[in-house]
Length: 498
Image (cartoon, rainbow, N blue to C red):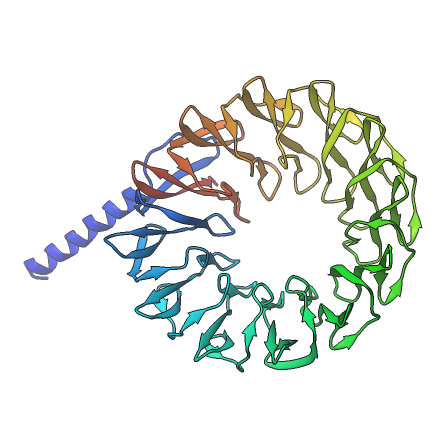
């Protein structure tokens, strides 16, 4: 091998060592994990409309490198455009793709993963939408005064308007539906096939069943409203709301108004009328339907048509994951209590954040007695604190452990299995989280002006900011999050050691 080739080989080797070194920066050691920090690129000072991917692994935002705006994804800048719709920037549900609407001269186009699509006169209201699996995308566009939906890059039939907010993919990603206007009427288009015309269609009412095999929506016919399921119109009512499919997609329920009364319609059968009804819910197995109702001054829960005990107020109605149990918190006078399987618990001055364990065997909630707050698990009250972090209460995947955020004076901490952790100036709203095997707990915290992640009580590296929705555990137990430090964006990982 000649000298020039040896030089090239050694140069490449040195380059690889440098890259590897950047990806494994030294940091605080956490027992059982290897620290890895990878610089993704700069984090600009001029940041607009920052959006994190649903899995928390990616960050996109709009900035200006000169006079024109561009989108930066994980520190890497896309092309510049004349304008970018700030409300259009969106990640796919799996976090693998990013899209937004941009202006180029007098035209608008949608950019997906840095690739510019066809140019149109305008792009529809709201951001483009991805299918749940992230493999498909659709958006509304106009050309020559006519509107149409572009799905998978192909424009569909033209209409007078496409209803904003009514463009959706089925959960399996195989079907796309939207509401359109034609000569003063509205209709639903499913996979390019136009349905019956109505006087109106509720833009937020169009839904697919969870299995993607059925579609339903609420429509207006004169002064009456009705629900249409797979093209079949149901009974007419004075109002329709809260349209839902059961988890398996085989059943349909919704709230309807009939004169001065409200009722729940399940599988086409109207239930009893009440003065007010809250949103109905299906049990996870689809076998049961429950809702809160009011008759006169009293409130109660109705399960499968059977009304329960009366209270002054009902909030937070939930089924257990196996569908066999029902819980809610109720108010009687100035006191509140949790009712599980029809049995009222201890009265407190306040309750909240009611949850079942994943196996349905345990129930937990936050409670207040005077100025003190605590968590109640299976009827047993835990240690007192000044407040419980909203939406922080959770069970481990196996249902054997409990964690939550708590306030003590001006400090915040995380309690795991009844044991209080170190105090910090703040605990992120998305924290804490359990690892998939339930053995580890992690959360993001604020210490002074710095932010850091804590794993099993051990503090990680400090950053200027940690990404929204962070940290997250991967199925393989790797803890990951995005962080900003000194003008750079980093991907941080704590990898379990063998």
